[in-house]
Amino acid sequence: QVQLVESGGGLVQPGGSLRLSCAGSGMRLNLRRMAWFRQAPGNQRELVADITSGGFRNYIDSVTGRFIISRDNAKNTVYLQMNSLKPEDTAVYYCNIYAGTIPWGQGTQVIVSS
Image (cartoon, rainbow, N blue to C red; front, top):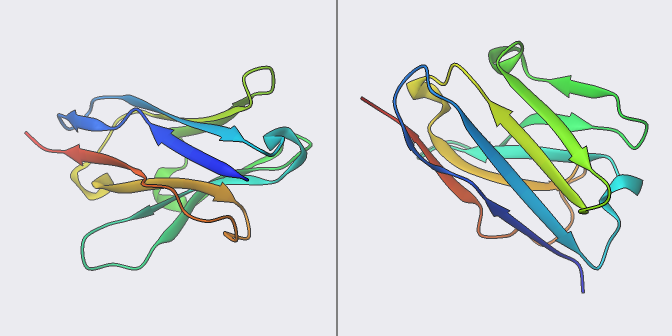
């Protein structure tokens, strides 16, 4: 059974940093185009960043230059390094394959507030 487990969220002040982790089981993440999504209260879930099996990275405009998606193949884990966090980054963050068709995990809550 394929499972993705997110962790690393928390409360951080504006300008701070967090690193989110997505640990996979039942599937080799390095063979898939993996992505991070987020859902803020009252909003639809949106794609934030993705990394292809070849290592190419893509970001939405609002996080470009601040977030970095990466992968550790030995650990079967995908990361999202988030720097210069803003209050508008507050959301529950999820990982999934790019198509978003793996059952969603619990996500990890990120709150950016002073």
